[in-house]
Image 1 (spheres, rainbow, N blue to C red):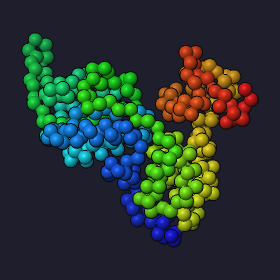
Image 2 (image 1 turned 120 degrees about the horizontal axis):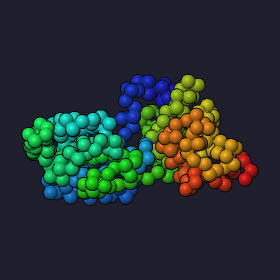
Image 3 (image 1 turned 90 degrees about the horizontal axis):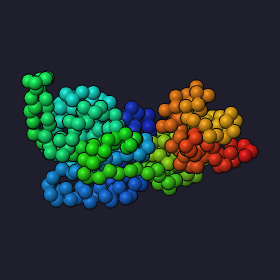
Image 4 (image 1 turned 60 degrees about the vertical axis):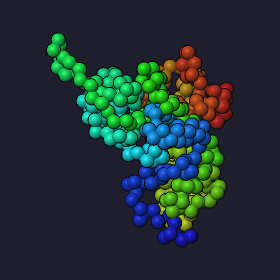
Length: 332
């Protein structure tokens, strides 16, 4: 395929909407999470046969694994419009009341980062989810009174990266199920990369897609990000396809090693080994030594380092493992 028809083809697309373009539109295009897909299939089929909206669903897991995509697919499978918001956007009870009262029968409401709902808003959610009513308090003090508005039947789909921060009363009301999304294996990631490359109009060699999959940290979002950066490199260098050599050169520029470790990951591990003899050390101390926010280390770097066995959490702090020493060429 010529350069004009492959790497450059993407210039004709709406580049501002690439993420939504790459999102699967059908269950058959959604790779991985087989157990969740089977459970959702039964849930949706049963709801369809009862002519009733699906029950409320909670998805949780690390960022980039497909929680929002699943919400879109559930909405499409149910043939119901999807309304999208997030926990931080619903600041007051009035905000939630406005959203709920504007729903039509059968609508699907998706709330991302549901763990960030404030307590007063969350408490209003309970009767809305359980009984389909909205309790609103009018006035203050002895003259205050409560009115109850009936809501149309709807499905709430929520997503969170911190399920422990979702209160037990709220979790228990997701009667359709609470589903944890797992990291993807390399074969699944490679299938996602091959599908995305077709959508982007990019020719990619088999060994190049394997290399991108190896460095994608088991996350579709990372895989698509890396594919786009490799595509950019190939386009600028007038390559007609993505090959292994170009992909490796791209990763060298991005400072991403063969296991998908970013420069910040390696800095954390090297600091842990060089300054603190491999640990244990508290995350606050580690963050201070790096002039980094501890929440960034906990939420961005640690999940993958723990997953691949390079880091351990102990009661006394973080510890670098023998695998981390070996990968970074340090002596134990």
